[in-house]
Amino acid sequence: MSVVVLISGRGSNLKALMDAGVPVRAVISNVAGAAGLGYAAAAGVAARTIPHRDFATREAFDQALARAVDDYAPRLVVLAGFMRILTAGFVARYDGRLMNIHPSLLPAFPGLDTHRRALAAGVKVHGCTVHFVTADLDHGPIIVQAAVPVRADDSEQTLAARVLREEHRIYPLAVRWFLDDRLSVSGGIVRVKGGDAQAYFASGA
Ligand code: GRF
Image 1 (tube, rainbow, N blue to C red):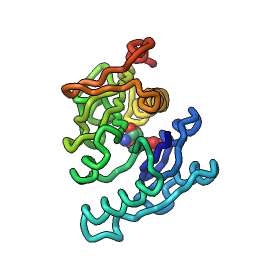
Image 2 (image 1 turned 90 degrees about the horizontal axis):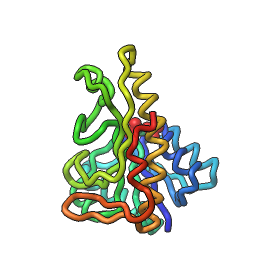
Image 3 (image 1 turned 30 degrees about the vertical axis):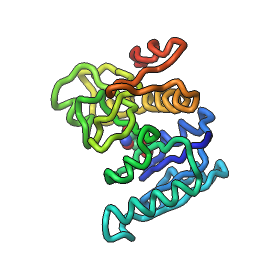
C-alpha cells in the first residue's frame, strides 16, 4: 500500500500528503539538502538523496533512482516538485503508477514558469492538475484539477500561493483514490469510480 515520493526542493506537497495520512514509505531527492527531506526525517520516514550530478547520463541517474525506488516496493510513485525530466525507460517501468502535480490547468501551460505565463496570457482562470505521467512531458491522463480565479491585481507570487493551496487539497485526494483502487484509465481518459468525485472538480478558491 505504500508510496514513494520524489522531490527536488521545498516539499510542501509532500507535507500535505503526509499530513493527509498518505502512507509515505520513503522520500528521495535529487538535490542534497532539499527542504522537503526534513519533513520526512521529522516523521521518521526514510529520506534519501541521489544527486543527479553524480551520474554521467540521464539514463544512469534514472537507473539508480529506480533501484532506490524499488527498495521500497511502492504501489505508487509520486512526483512532488521533482525537477528532473525522466527517461522513457523510467516512465515505462512505473506505467500507470507514476503521478505528478503540475501548477496549471493542463493542457494549458505545460513546462516551467506557469504562473508568469498565465498572467502574461491574461487568462481569467488558472489552477493545478494531478495527472499520470507518460513519456510526453506534462501531457499524461488527467486525474483531478482545481481552478482558481486570476485577479486583476495578482502578482506571480499571489497567484502561485492561491494555486498552491489547491495543490495541497487535490494531491492527497488523487493519491487516496489510487490507493483505494478507484482510478481507471481508458483511451487516455481517467475515470474515478464511485462516490461524488465529480464535486472535487469545482473551484476551491
Ligand atoms: C509545485 O508548484 C508543483 O505543482 C510543481 O512544483 C512545485 C513544488 O512545490 N510541480 P513543493 O516542493 O511541493 O512545495
